[in-house]
Length: 355
Ligand SMILES: Cc1ncc(COP(=O)(O)O)c(C=O)c1O
Image (cartoon, rainbow, N blue to C red; front, side, top):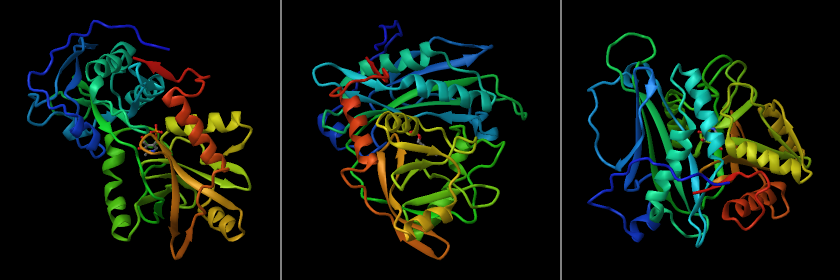
């Protein structure tokens, strides 16, 4: 698949910050590419998007996002295609998820002509910011927030949509250590758990900080009613391999429907691996480990794709999850995803969108 060239006007920076060194050494999220896409919503409609230099933008002193929290975002990647530009991974899925989040947060949906065509146009302008090293990508971060001013607890009448991008190098991580959270909850039935809204992340920061102070990378969220069933990790969905079956919590409305999760499950099923989307009690994970049936476990998300889990603690019990072996379904599905993204393998689902 590819996008058509659009007529989004571009104002190029006269003071580019680009250097190969900056691009190739940037820590995740630390360096922004030279341009952003901006579109404003007012009077019941989206205005035309523009691509402008990254920089300060005037705004009301306290736009409504700061009061009532209508702030949402997305995250996905453009992968380099040696000698052939770049390709976006499943931008349509992120677009659809952002619009679901819009509906949940009483915000206006964003058209594909701004989200998808806008991303493609922005990536074309800042193509040189895509690191070429294997495993590198340009991280794409669309955000949308309420810019109205008159106070009152109701949906804002004005919004801004921005796409900014960051060069991001290969994600080399060791195993991710998780602390199953006993006190705080991320979401509950009927809440906003399935939406990618800023408030979900604000509410998680204290828990993540406390887990880090105890020596873990992040929390493993449990359900908000019984604190018994596994939900997801701080920034990733989770999968467990038990008895050669990949088990993952269902999309019940309280976890983020990850695009990586969906991609991984789709490919695993095609590989003939048994996949179960069902509730999984934290005790079941520990019991499976005690019985030697827990073969591996991983977080799955855009940043790392498949990050092996290491230590897992719940109350006074702690286990070290067995590492992912080369013949594990998780290793095989990770390799398959990589080959689709680099263009080395067949893209049977037309997930890649050339720009
Ligand atoms: C809370 C949470 N869960 C899961 C994910 C994984 O989603 P995706 O695979 O779309 O990146 C993310 C990252 O976006 C996340 O923030």
